[in-house]
Length: 168
Image (cartoon, rainbow, N blue to C red; front, side, top):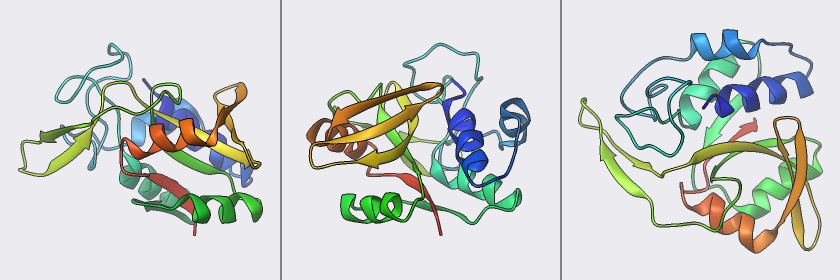
């Protein structure tokens, strides 16, 4: 369940910043709110919802990448056109998706102990979009590269509101 850290260090490496996945994971804030910090344990069971082991959303990841000197920005409601502009400029994009780019499902709402409500989904996952063509996007998921059709990607990405980390 450390996909966010893995994606972040792969993304940082693309821009010439070498980070350790374990170090990045250890420096993420902890919270019961995925919009504020990592929920649970990276060794927890997959597919859970907060307050059980879940992961972390874009804002804390972008903030920590920024701490390491990268001009990272968390975005929500990001458009596919804007994502393609980032890719065309040579900037891969970290995206939050449902599973391994599965067709989307209805997300849930979770209210953390501080009263903040976050949109969550079982099997929350991050991957890096590195390319696209008229039919598909190219995905880096750890050491594995693959493609998914644009409709399937858009369905999965929309589950958590088109959340991403971009180079700003």
